[in-house]
Length: 225
Image (cartoon, rainbow, N blue to C red; front, side):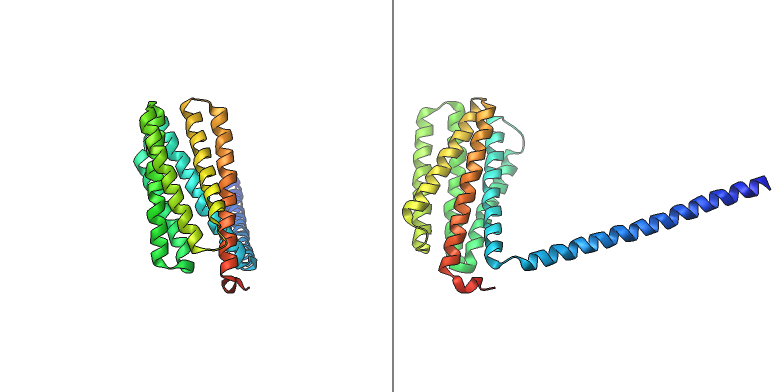
């Protein structure tokens, strides 16, 4: 009789656990469903203008995040440099693809073709700076500036809202801040390194918003919600 009571108690505990688990699972799944619906509803509430700004910011944040990754790999001689460079180059394709709906495939490919050297030359700049090779650094920096000029001219010719002097100013600021970031890392001034990246981040968001605003002004019919 005692054994029977013990078995009944154990059975009751197991049954209670199963019921509780099923109930919790239902609540959890319901919560996930509600969150998904809320997320979808929120997405539908976002204007096409905001969607563009968010997407553009994401692209350019990827640009500086993977640029930083490459800087760290080169300066600190970390594994995965090739993979980081490959991912960064993919970002240039993503940026080129982002303008295709507005300026066409040819323009998108052109921009990607200008941005990829921006990355490879940047690697030359960092490598020369790490080696302390002043001659190579000056040569790489000169190529980097020329490439930035080409990018600025291309963008300003595509959109009248992207004034040449404005785009050149932002591109040159981007190069300067990225150089500051790399130099600080090379010098093992990690506080300055972190501060420099903060400035890089702030500047790139301003540029991303400038590009988004220019597209919205140039193609207002595409942003009627």
